[in-house]
Image (cartoon, rainbow, N blue to C red):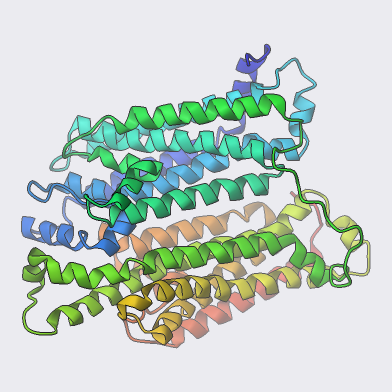
Length: 543
């Protein structure tokens, strides 16, 4: 499997291509991890407040969200930070690695770049091996800078062993998913298929981790936390027990998967995947020959896959609702902290905890629902960059009509995806009887205007500033930082109000208000209008 000469120059070529993207990722991780860690120095006034926060995390709903809770007997700010943030940071690092590997392997192959590079004296395995090695160096650099950044904060409980295990867990899981993404790039013949396969694997492992962490330690289901890489990385117990063995296990798994991927790459044909592309019909249907039918065909796969995915995500979190009442009834410390006493008090408190959990998780699911909506409208930009819009506009199809078709489908998705999540959430919680169907659906659809606003921004950028289309992802990241993590980081309330999601009333905890919904909807329509008008006037193919 040894590649021909050219591995080092190819690695330098990847470094040059990544001279902006990867440093931005690494700097973002460093600033986020150190900034939020420093917030823990003034987040809790007394040790009792910190213990109360940790106790609220011991309920199954929160453990399914953030992972296992440990060290209540000797809790420190560093320990609490690791418990609350490691799972979130791991998911983000995994996403970075998936995009990195697919971008340099299957995407280059699909666009014909790799075939041109193969004309040079490089081996068949030079591209995947160099990409994987670059991913290894990236995760190593990530682990080092995060560990050093955490040590620089010097908050109470911070120690070198815990900092390097915390950061090492991120790097090990990230490298493992880089290998998984490389394998997906060999299995599927398109970059979209490889990305979808990688994220499906990530979703399966996340669900396994969630079910494992919310189960008792003596349950067979708890083993899922150790089988899933996302759960195994959390077993390091940073700043408490500082367990080292999960890291070499994760690295060994990454090496095995990488070797399999390279073996597959060595035998398959260039441009093809192990899983063959499905053969289409010999003749297009009448609906497919219409602009709407053709547009729907291009985005249909993503639409259906994300609908199923959102349903599963909602059902995953809904399945833990039933554990809340049992937790409240059996956890004496939790009852003391909340002052529960008297007949029926447990049921009432369980309902309040479930409502708070739904309000919290609905924000997260709404932000996840933004992803497929932006991917749908971004398909238009992708078709333009690939030069496939000129033949369409050569026919009697107006530009604004094509943009409008993509926008209509994405608009329907803005309500449909979050609705799927709500249906999954309620359906899985039916045995508990703690959620109301109408209230759950209303709390989900409240976020449709916020999702529509980000869709409007994407349409506006595609029409007026196509090179800056990626800014919509920065807005989504800012929303997650301020709305979901803002209270944890003690950010001012006005920072969340700058995000569309920060203006939405969080039902059923907060009171309903129609004003922000109408305002966001109006803003979205204005952005869409000017985006479509600008797209109709500008040059096509302007990259």
